[in-house]
Image (cartoon, helix red, strand yellow):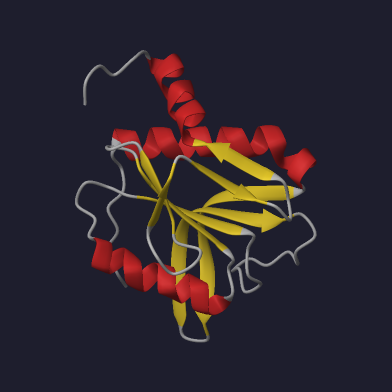
Length: 151
């Protein structure tokens, strides 16, 4: 069992905004987003994804064994890149084609789908039509609670 950094406001607000975004578009994209879902990446290894984006046509599994459309991980200030590298490589080996990482403190996004940390202001999946603009996402958080000021 590996301890995870959870419970901080920026992490929670971002997870909330992502869930709201996917719920608003789930019929259009034919996906279902689930927070904190167990994903069985090997017969003996399980990961808990911050956000797991499932195809609406995927089998209904209590513990996900079918590769999801996307995994979104949200960094906490204490997180280390090396620790995330192991987690993301587990997801890649499972066959998940979209691996997205968001740093809420720095308000930066990284696409790890290719196995490299590629900074990006938005994420997309052409097979489903998913579009996720980080500036819009962070603006929705600021609108909900007021501008956080300089971080």
